[in-house]
Image (tube, rainbow, N blue to C red):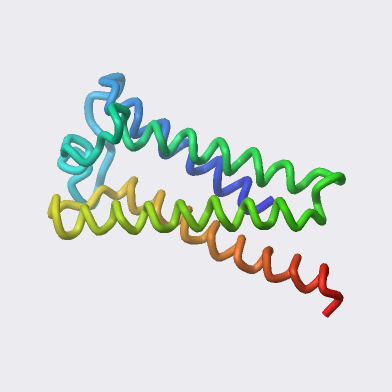
Length: 141
């Protein structure tokens, strides 16, 4: 359930940044950092879509898998735990790459991107613990 809550928060961040890229929001609320610099860089688009739009798809998928894991049918499913581990692991690697770009290539930090990276990192840590627990339950240890 915690991962579903985190994914829901991530959807909010990603929608906000996507609305900015789409021109619906004129300026980002960014008290620390240079959100506009990051969001207008060439790295803010991937395969013709804003990275934030990819973030919406990612967080919706994460929410779906996490929510499925809260249902009675799948609450003890090792496959759901593995899917969450893989999704959050991929998200953590991608967020690390984006953070690298911000720090060493763009030379600007977006507060909203940092929030998203923290959400993904926490979700990854939770999924690691969940996977370990599901493995222990399966093995009877």
